[in-house]
Length: 141
Image (cartoon, rainbow, N blue to C red):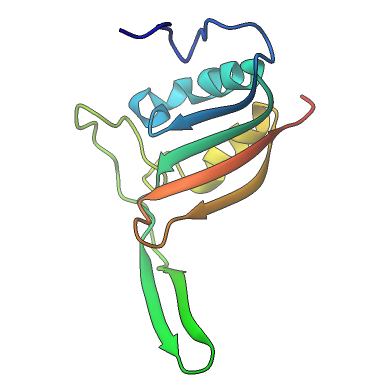
């Protein structure tokens, strides 16, 4: 029994209602052409920050090495791709970063168009399929 039910397109709260908005593994369930609309609404209800998690299919190699004296070193090494694969709607995800039509660069541009500044973007070593964005609300153009 949730207290409030709403849509990411019409979040039922006043402008700047929250210091931080978290939106994890949600936006890829919307058609890609509606991403900016959802980002605009997240921008509206946050006072300062938003944290997003989106699926990223860009291939990486995981390097996990133990170096004597220095300890452990972990890194994600991008694997260049000649072209992005095409995403077919699977009943769940309309799009994913790294697939044709939704590149990381395009997603970053949409985030900026919505008025956010990306303070950090990263992938988790153990599960690189998840890309996180720490966003700060900036002035709109």
